Length: 317
Image 1 (cartoon, rainbow, N blue to C red):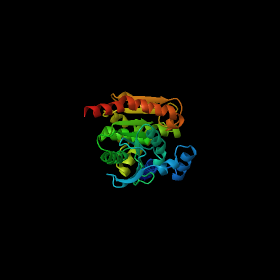
Image 2: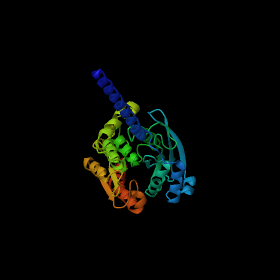
Image 3: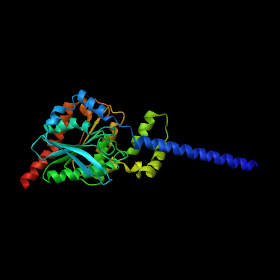
């Protein structure tokens, strides 16, 4: 009888632990897969108020709205902005919880630098399809479709760049280093180097937990629910394979994605490469807090690694 009670209590305890683990695993993966996005109207009002989105310019700008088929089974919504008579183009990849309107500030900068731009919504953001956010894992395939589409329009002789911010920067590096390298340069603004490290950092910052158990549980449930592993999302590993010029940008005041992550990737990346760490700015605020210096940094990078190369290839042909 005593043994039977022990077995029953043990069974109840095991069941309770299993149930709690399942609930916690679903809770954590829901937070990741269905991260709360900023409201589109909020983004619009914020960018208008900060004078980063010039709606008059946008309405007058020559542009084409496009739907691009993703290999993941939905459509990606983008806008090809063409204020200049040039084929040279930069694709802008926004951060998590944002949408393509957040990319307009960079579009105006690149117009001044001699480029048209293609801005698009990541999966599950803005007007694009897709059910979950995967922090670059599935997004990199969407970016591949975008890059190939834009390249087919502008031609092989035109300069094509990709500029990513936060998750968009991680996606950019994952695309270039693990799928294909079909652009002439990349700019990675405040990218994380390793998703498992980033999740661990956020958990430690937002909770009292000091164990990796939540990350392992999240990974287990992500594999089951969304088909990929947290450890699959490693821009640092991808960077080692990129031969094209990369500019790493980060703010030293960034406490969400630590600037050390960009420094790690800069060390791993082979030449050609450049890094700029801004003194001012929280996460994804380098441009907003240092617009003039930011543009000069991009211009210097282009003059050193991109413009000259393009002029040489033109003269050789």
